[in-house]
Image (cartoon, rainbow, N blue to C red; front, side):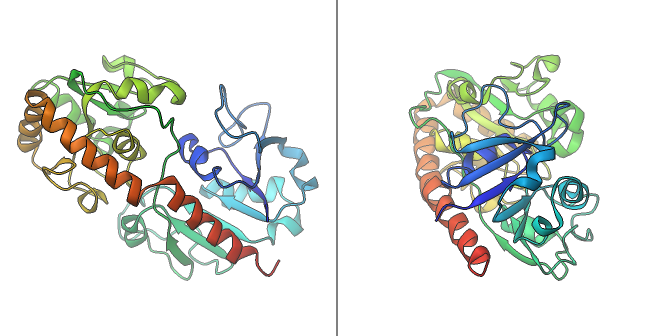
Length: 316
């Protein structure tokens, strides 16, 4: 049965993936395009059954389920655009991020709400947050990208795919990027990347064809959930070099899918190895792609979400 689901546009790549579940999805929009209210977005590749609805008309919708993704969604947006009846519908708080300011002593916004299902995108996230009384489970990431895109690695250079890396500072590993690109060929792509000598922002529909030409993806993220850029790169058959932090040590096996380490000297050495050995990069990229298909495949992801949707709406 197709459900009517309201979700805010917070993370474009994740929205593309979760809407592969073939339900009737509604995105609230406002003229000012405030956070969460951009609708489908410019040049959208979302399925046709993902529809925009003016925020002031959301109360008229016959909804089955609400998905919150930010504290603002959960506390403010809910009251502003949902009717009292809609606010009582089954709800999911989808948590994309690791807790701040502290990785173990931060209470989740939904921690006291036993009526909302809390979903984390990694086991690491669930472990770090204080989930309180909330029902918390994990549905691991997936990505929905053009299946015809395939890694070539023909460019002997690594690439990062991080938005606003310089503004996010040490959390995003900007200092490590600056240090390591002095030692090995390395660039970056994403919002405001041009300001630090990178490629700038490339639309999601074209991003992976560009990334596929580089020898490896480097993820310098010190503290985050499992970056979607890593899964996207693995999905197209690209080897990964990354810090051995957050969920990544459970994903990347050294010499099999790429390399992980917390030693910048080791990372620089492994990057140079991939640059000097393109055949090894291809081998590790193929292994990474196989892992992406099994652990992070869109089929598994859709099944997990549909199972949760069915369970939450069974009594509605």
